[in-house]
Length: 325
Image (tube, rainbow, N blue to C red; front, side, top):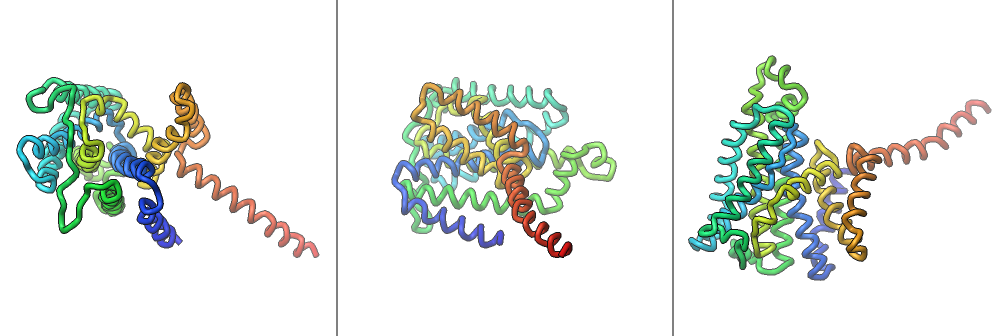
């Protein structure tokens, strides 16, 4: 049943850009990129157990590194991307070694400071980043293996493939020995250390994997929007990723994707109430959090349980009538 649902969903996603207009394809692509970013946060939040307000910094570092290499030094996208990903993972490892020993609010505050320092460096290093004006005219990735990405439809499929690879890789990760150790460390660090699990190493690995996935989203963000600016990587970008992960369902892989769909399309449906849209979005988020503390996936589980009880009740009653007769 699960395989059939995945196959149907894959068919729908492949057919979608052929049935929709340019604007709807744009929204779908934006949703896919946000889903990648939300997945990166979902890994850190749900499997490492840390609230990372510096996740947007990793996105910015990867996006800017790739764009600068391409625009200033003429490096091909497919060569600049691995360099940018290596840079962001190295920085994440260094930051993790320095900060992951901190507990609770101290880690949150230090990562918030890291994100703000990164944004200020980007905003003030004008010779390299062009300061607050940002990098403009970022071109789509160069063709590879005969595939071009200069149309909305082709870029959509690039983002779809990246998201699918991320989901598959993370699915394999959380079922591996490393994934089980991450969950053990999240649940109880003292017990994990007592039974021989290297707590610090696993937390750094989790942060680095989250930074890598965030970097993948950053690589797509520049060519998709054609512009990068410091204002795109404020605290609110990290908060949006957290909200997507929480609304969809923390500790799952599908949850952040559902959260990205929710946070991209609900504001779009509320566009007719532009003056009240922020208040209405806030109210919707509060309602979802109160009604479904385990996210949209938890709400779906509750609905399935109610349906199962609803369909099971007549059968039980009929059985009781049969026994009585």
